[in-house]
Amino acid sequence: MHGAPIGAFYSIQANHLYEKAEFMYENLSTRFPGEYVNLAHLFHDRKEDLYTSDSIHYTTEGSRTIAEAMAHFCSHERCLR
Image (spheres, rainbow, N blue to C red):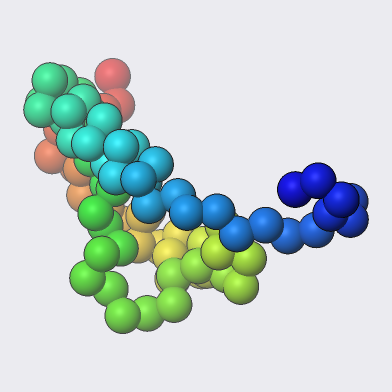
């Protein structure tokens, strides 16, 4: 990073961070069933482009996929108290 121009893009290997986060979310859904739902695997089998070109923000379809999963969970659990 030394000598890089300000605002330069960097590529980092973050797979292990995502795996760690997925494990943490899965653990929460196991420890608090009905209180917490794990959506970390929601996009794994999808073929559509669910992220915008910056790979951070969701496309309209990505946002819709998340909203549908949350609505489904809330319709079956006590998320609105």
